[in-house]
Image (cartoon, rainbow, N blue to C red):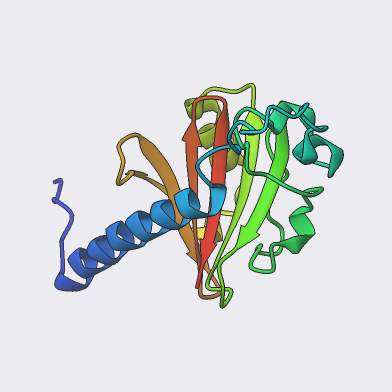
Length: 168
């Protein structure tokens, strides 16, 4: 005999909270990654060396994250859970960012993998205790969400890149 899963108010509340968190994480990720590079020089002066590349940003990151600056270091993500898996092969860390007050942190990567391959790699690599689950992202497409020790995470893949957002 098969029984349908029982839905409770707590379950419905948790889904609503996750959806709101997903939306907040996406908005935060978009705000942290910036909109684009600078504008043309009105004086017609010769362009200077690209500050993103000369500052330590990997060259492969320039197109996907034009506002990236400085050498990225995953150790700067203080909310990174212990035992967090390495990024999938073919992925390069481009930048990390934190909101004022430290309630959200992002790690932005470029990758040669498809969105599906990124999600599969993290599903395979994450500890089952983190409760990772796929959900529909607030901007469409699937995201991987979960929580551990009071920190929520969301992995949002895109074309040629992905963002891992952490929030308290």
